[in-house]
Image (cartoon, rainbow, N blue to C red):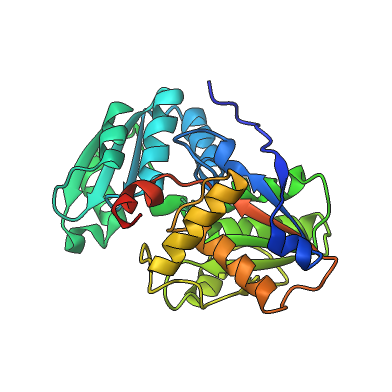
Length: 295
Ligand SMILES: *Cc1c(COP(=O)(O)O)cnc(C)c1O
């Protein structure tokens, strides 16, 4: 049974580049939280799942693309906590290992056109207006409650860090981390690596989450490698080398871009010697499975 309170370990990464630059890098292994409810997806689901239980809801309804980590996390969390799960999948019907896993965990998949998918709230209302047992969870776990769950990362830390690096998709995780840094009165600078093109929109999303933060994370906008789930041979080779040399599996969609950015910032002398840096390993399985043919 999945525990609601699991503190993932912080582990130092030994890597020649870090040592040469007198920088210590630690990784918080949220990828170890659960094999399928991986990383920040559990952090984001924790409060909604808890609330759904309290409200005696029976069905979790959520949304995602065909390679969504969040769909799989919801399917697995639903199975662990005795909910029926329904996933609306964007685009025409396809089959892939992630959707298969969703079904193995008992999720019912409903494929909808990209047009219909655009208004998720309407889709939910149209299908579940007469079902008081259904509980809405947004795509990617984007929500204020999701951010609250991510805040816990900061409270769990056992050291202080000069900088904290984290990948950004919807910005929910970054919003939670920023809130945690503020609440715990830490000096750490939060650095976000958007995995999409034009990642500046994340700042608005973080503000929209209603999070009371005095400061917003600093975003590094140039590590998207062409856009969401886009890769280059350079990124693939980085992912391979990093994984081989550290024993920590990263993938090209999120954490590969994150660690690439961190390496590149060190190479460019953007991180002061004697700094201690934390990178949050947000988990993620689909990025590696979806891009295996690129390796
Ligand atoms: C979903 C996901 C993210 C993005 O998190 P947001 O809170 O949406 O910014 C980052 N890393 C991994 C591995 C993910 O699966």
